[in-house]
Image (cartoon, rainbow over all chains, first blue to last red; front, side, top):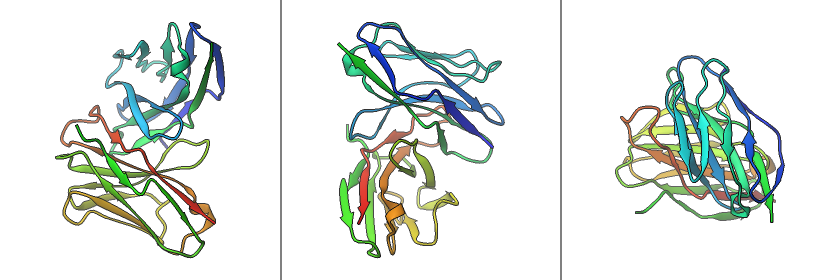
Length: 113
Length: 116
């Protein structure tokens, strides 16, 4: 079946460090890929997305490239801030006959000053 | 710009009681989704609607769960005879279709359910 696998957290970084959160997927067809972020006590916010192979999604300094050959969509940021502390979810959408998002288990990021 | 609105935000109920959550999607969004999220896990799909038609239901949606969207606008999710395992955050989301699978699905802030 279709699934998303994320690296386990927590990821603990100092402010201004480089961030990578790994995400790989298994899917039939050609899904769209998403990163959502969840701040404590809140719902999910879309961070970025990519709809086809080699597309790069970017927002607020975060980037992720849709790599079909490695079935990956790793999230990166060059310099994290304390305010980036949150849980990050990788998700896919658009496999045959369904319109649901399939999420990974999430990766908690903690950034310290 | 009004986002997806959920009510109540928090609900504590005794085991065996019924609870109902309401979701108001973004205006003109014709697709509405329900997800469940437990601590430390990603959201799990429950069901979605296109206007008033329920197009898909997850096997997670047992007979005690029912979702409706009678006029194609707001939706309700009812849980009957609640169990402790129902304790979770229930997330509602909406999107505009057609728009393709790259179209954004917008989430509400969720309704926390605690069954004691």
